[in-house]
Image 1 (cartoon, rainbow, N blue to C red):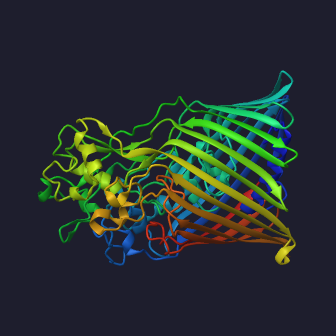
Image 2 (cartoon, rainbow, N blue to C red):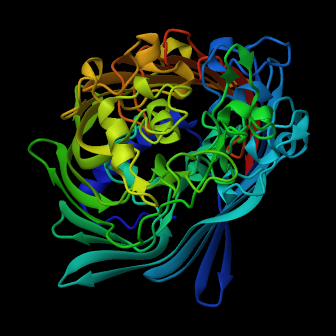
Image 3 (cartoon, one colour):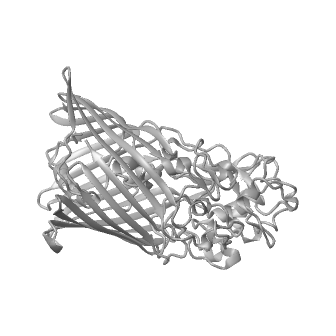
Length: 617
C-alpha cells in the first residue's frame, strides 16, 4: 500500500524506518503483488500464508503456582495466590502449546488519487482446539484433562477465526495549494519513535496480544486498527500537520485465560469468576474446589467472586495532533504531539453489592469489574537524526492522569472483608491491607463501584540507535538496533509507611504478611532492548541464512501496571535462525529463554521454542 507522503520530513523518516525494519524482518526483494484491472480501478492483492508450532522447554517453578494446586508430576505449588497460574499448569515441559496455520491478505482498490484498503487475517490453532490440558481454566470450572473453552473469548483471542483488520478509504488532494491526505475507517496511526519499548504516544494503538504470541507472528497481525478519521496536511515542503479523531473505542485484547502466556485467570473476556482460596488453614484448596465445594467456615459459600459488567468508556473524546518538521541545518526531524484517549488496558475494580457481609459466592451481588478509565492525556516531543553513521531517534512523553492498578491482593482482601468490617475479616487478613484502602472500600455506599486504581502523572523518555554494518562478520550485512528508556511516576506514596501499594502480581503474596515490600510500582524504572541480525547470502542451494539475537533487560525499578514496561531484574534472550529460499518463501526457528534474575516475574519459567514457515504471493 502507498504511504501517500508529501514532505521531505516523511522521506527522512521512511529511510530510517526501512533500516529499522531490516532488523525486525529479513531484508529481501519486495514480493510482487497480484494486480488486476477492474474497469477504471486497479486492484492489488498481497497475501502471506504461514504455519508454525511452539512448545515449552522449561519445567514449572512451584513458586509461580498456588499451594492449592499441583502440577502433572504431583508437585505442589508454593504461591499464596491461585489467581494467575492456570496457563502455567496446563502445559508441561515438552508440551506443544500452539500449532497454527494462518493467513494475512491485503487488498487495495484505487483510481487516480483515491482508493480503499483492507486487510483480512484468518487463523486456526490445532493444539488449542484439540488438546486436553491438565489443569483447565475458569470457563470449565478448572476440571482437569479437558479442552479449553474459548466460546466467551474475544474473537482475537479465540483458537480460530477470521478478522477484518484495516478497512479504510483514502484520498490525496490539495487545499490552498497544500497536499492533504485523508483516511476514514479502521486504521492504525503510527506516531512517535519507539521501536521495542511501547511509548504512550504509540500507545494510542491497541494490540492483539495473542497474535504476537503465535509462531511466525508479523507486526501487521498484532496491531489492531480502530475506526478513525485521519488527516495529514503538508504545510510546507518540510512540515506536516497531522490529526486523528477516533470514532469508536477499542481495547487491547489479552491472551485467553488458561493459555500458555496468560498470567491472570479472571481478566480476559469469557473468564467470569475469580477463585480466591488457595488453602483453608493447613488444608490445600484447588481451583476446581473453589468453583464446586462450599466452605462451612465461610458460611457455606463457594470461595469465588463473580465478574460484574465491564465498565467501558464512551467512544467520544479521543483525538490527537502531531506537528513534524525537518530542519536541514540539523539534519533532523522534530515532532510535537498532543492527544487524549481512553485506557486500552484492563484494570480491576470492585462492584460493591447490597450486603456488606456477603461479598463472595454464587449468592452475592458483589463483584469484581474489569475497568477502562477515560480521558488520559498525552503530550510529547520527538526527534530523528543521523550522527556518525548511526540513526538516532528518541522521544519524551508525559501522561496526565494515567490509571495505575492497586495491588490486586490488597484490593481483593479489602473487597472480601468490606474494608475489614464483616465477620470474615480475620480469615482474609484484612489487617494486612493499607488502612487508606480499607477505608475507601468501607466508606463506599452499597451498589457502587470502588475504583481499583489511582491516577498519576507519568513521564517516559527513550532513545533508539540503529546501525548497519556492511560485510561484517563474513556476512552481507549486520544490523543492530538498541533502545533504552526510563519511566518516572510523580507522587507515589511510601509503601513501607502504610501507603497504598500498586502493581505486583498476586502470585507473590501480601507484603504485610511476608514483610516484602519490593516489586511494587516505583517512582523510577529503566531498561533496554537490543537486537542484532546478520544476513548471509546464498550459503547453500541459493538459501540465505539470517541469524539473530535479541536481549531484553529491565535494570532497575518497577514501572506502572497494567502494561508494565520494566520489572527489575527481568531478562530474556531470543536466538533465531531464519532461512530465505527466495523473496517469497521463508522459514525460521527461534528459542526464547527467560532468566531467573527477576524475583517478581511471573513468566520466568516459560522458555519456549518456535518453528514457522511462510509463503507470500
